[in-house]
Length: 432
Figure 1 (cartoon, one colour):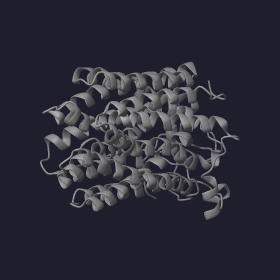
Figure 2: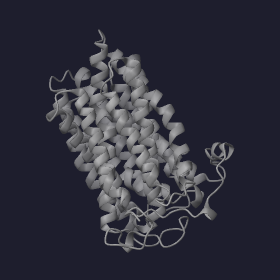
Figure 3: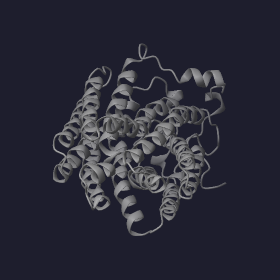
């Protein structure tokens, strides 16, 4: 017997972390502080490995390889690579989520896929750091994005599998808060500790694997053979479509997440280029870290405090509506007043809105799922609404920059998408 086996509770596997019922049962027992700590730790590694390249390493690598006469070419190349990665994400998220739903390993449904995703993600990052051609950089980033999808599809499904409804806002906050910490810690590590870009990618890969380990020793209820749905290509493909007419609240929540995530991506993914080329900031990388630090503080506060408040009040929609609106306000500030000081204020407002959105919207998503037997696949589809916009956002932003020669339209579009997301979530009816 290993420490990963579904054995009786031990000191390493507290009873509060176990699900004594069938894998498909709605969880009622609150997860422990230890479970939440391990969950937050693995997400810290995930966000460091995903967002540090997006914010700094990848655009800098592309610019160094291209050496363009016109800086717009670098923005377009970055946007194109992100767009190709988005296509892979659309396929990888629901597919791997559906496969984890049907996994009958004695180690549980989700843990095997967390391991596979972490390995694919880490190895792809190492390979990415070694590339010197644009096509190879794009291919390696697509592979890294697929690893990210495999890993996070399984991780997000554990919320529905193991966390009761009245604890999901708070637990989801511990998925969101590490995102902000991951960005700033990742930026500091690759700018202060390493001098070579390839070593930066390697460092992130190692951190990802190390921080994933604690969660792998938490119990994951195995799926009984009788509960397993037959795996067919037709069944999996058919499952990618969830009728918004039959499940309108799932549809509105999905649409809201798509719109808000596109708006957030427009406001954050081209920030380094905005500082470098719009503001002519000679200290663009340092100021990016300052803006990210401000953003981080407010994301952490909002995701944890407002996520818990949402649990206590039993309300989700009002929080998501407010969070979406705040992000729109932040984007408008950047559009109307392109200044570093204003950008700092906008970073705080954006962090407040996005932190609240991340935690409460995730809790909302788990409450509008159509079928307990397909939580991984359905949340995989919901995750597309976050991951694809983050990849497509730079492409839309690049097109806006090409069309206007500035970043004003980028931020105006970001505001429009955020406000539209607020309207979409207001149409949800089954959850307050």
